[in-house]
Image 1 (tube, rainbow, N blue to C red):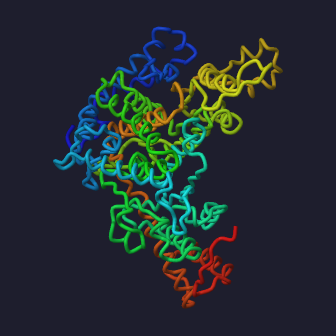
Image 2 (image 1 turned 60 degrees about the horizontal axis):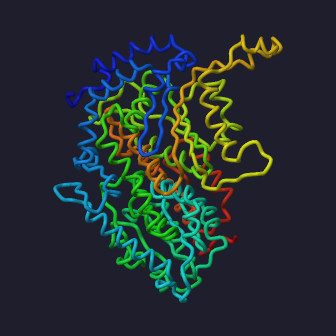
Image 3 (image 1 turned 60 degrees about the vertical axis):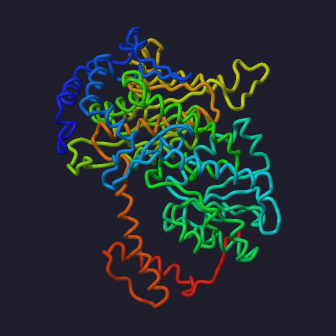
Amino acid sequence: MASSSLISDTQSWKDLKAHVEDIKKTHLRDLLTDDKRCQSMLLEFDDILLDYSRQQATPETIQKLLKLAEAASLKENINRMYSGEHINSTENRSVLHVALRASRDAVIQSDGKNVVPEVWKVLDKIQEFSERVRNGSWVGATGKTLKDVVAIGIGGSFLGPLFVHTALQTDPEAIESARGRQLRFLANVDPIDVARNITGLNPETTLVVVVSKTFTTAETMLNARTLREWISSALGPSAVAKHMVAVSTNLTLVEKFGIDPNNAFAFWDWVGGRYSVCSAVGVLPLSLQYGFSAIEKFLSGASSIDQHFYSQTIESNIPVLLGLLSIWNVSFLGYPARAILPYSQALEKLAPHIQQVSMESNGKGVSIDGVPLPFEAGEIDFGEPGTNGQHSFYQLIHQGRVIPCDFIGVVKSQQPVFLKGEVVSNHDELMSNFFAQPDALAYGKTADQLQKENVSPHLIPHKTFSGNRPSLSLLLPSLKAYNIGQLLAIYEHRIAVEGFIWGINSFDQWGVELGKSLATQVRKQLNASRTKGEPVQGFNFSTTTMLNRYLQASSDIPADLPTALPKI
């Protein structure tokens, strides 16, 4: 495609647009009677089973989507990513999160240099450091073992590591390796988050990991200064060097902050924040909690999907097919949202993480060449573990708006429970819902069925389910560190596929900048008003009114701020 052309100009896109009318004539309850079609929509890799037969699609639809992938040069774009080309053109960067979990002998180039040895140099440093902390050879300022870790970071420096940590917390192997240890994440600049994170912790036994590539992120650095004060006020300023480490590339600011640069763990500008959980951003705090060997298995799982994504043909490629189906739902069928529904409480932080990875990556209105898009790109992602979500928002997805759903199930529970006399185990009860809900969405319930059940006529409209609501099911064999890595990589690559085909840059995030720059103006105004009594000016009427109300109602805050830490 020429640099200024759009995917929507291609014949493949137009063919899919025309095909929508054919699909509107079908219903999933009819499509699901075709066993041959359903068989063609099953895909297995490394004991992961994908079933997308409940998508509003026929084999013809899939073929047209595969032709769209060809028109968008999908395979070439994947190769460009893996070869280290600067596909993040607005920031002139490679996109190489796959290098973060590559095997030690792999070769992945960026700017003519194999980056894998650098990655493993940092991983080896993390292994050595985390083992010293865990075995007690690295101790705090008073000689006590550091058994508690607070990781300070926001956005991609927080959501990914939190997802993995939450998923591992109930894994038997991880429980054993984490015994006696705590890992907490401080992200929000709200002082309540600070209070919650230090409650019950002793500075003498706490290690703080400050995660900021530039060491300038406003929220992260204010939280870091707050915990530095918490440590210093209890143990003295010199204790900071024993109780705080950094994940950053700005060694000058790390040292100026009071952290020994030798205790800074690097990552690179080819690692996007939301794709950084496999870098020191996630690997350091997670290794401190669970041990490096457990996190190495997580990296290995992600790497298995990386290799599948890179080497497998597009028609048998899990992330590719998932990405194509998302494009079909968003850009052709007009469904703007996607529900992520893991039937495992251990995956409760999956949806918040993917929400960021997806919406920050693909929430774009122009092509990678700056051309306004004549179609909608990106999805509104949300989710909640089953069965909790069933008692929350499933009403809407069954009888309200059509929202394509990702159902994620696990064959073997991390924590099986069996009760004598019960019909099924607790996990079987959970999985009964995992298997039933996609069919309920697909088939629905007709007025004729309700009449045969002798439902009162006035209730029939309220109890009718239209069905024909698309979903897909992903069944994992278990939820060990390896599988968690696989699941992460599947979603990361799916999102990249969508971006490649839409022709957008999935690896920049200029949309987060404007609000931050405007917040700087407000910060200056608050300081000037509190310290010098200057009137609020330079804002619109609404903001001026709200600022004045806030300043008046919080006038008890002293102009010369004394140090005061949370009282919990």
